[in-house]
Amino acid sequence: MNALSPIPDKFDVRGLAQAVALNTADEGLNLALLPAQWDLLAGYLLPCTLAPGQVLIARGEEDRSVFLVESGSLSVHFEDEKSRIRMALVGSGSVVGEGGFFSHMPRNATVQAAGPCVLWCLTPVRFGELSNRQPTIALPLVMAMAAVLTKRLRNRPRSVAAT
Image (cartoon, rainbow, N blue to C red; front, side):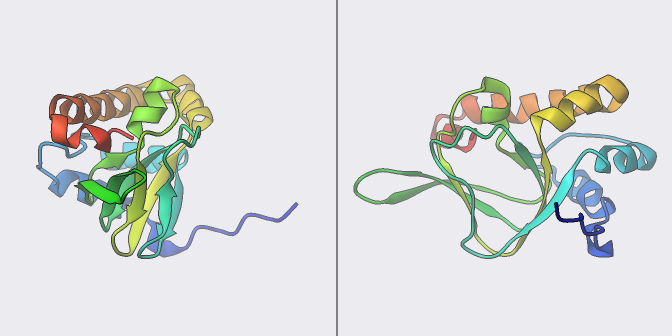
């Protein structure tokens, strides 16, 4: 078994907290946590980076992880037999993958990095641990993700962004 590498300093959760606070768009993750709560939440998240063009989520996958976007933007598109159609662009301070997280269904769209991205991954197992140990963080997080999902589903052209 390989030892886990320590998280580099560049993956400080404060960047995510700032991105969330600055995103006032309709699909922003409206999550107001105290700095100490962000630090606790970071212990349940896995930081990751994507290179431009790298696929994060492929249509049909059964993974239920959800991703909080610290920086960069992600193209969400539906692939058909004719061509790739961009349906949405998800930016910093938002979330992607919430559809599969809540529905337990395969992903309905592909999500690809439009440029370099820094993301924070939350798996269902880690969310279960978070909700058992830190319910005062888990509840606002899940409510914020559900609000984003609801807004995307109500906006028909952008509903595919609910991956």
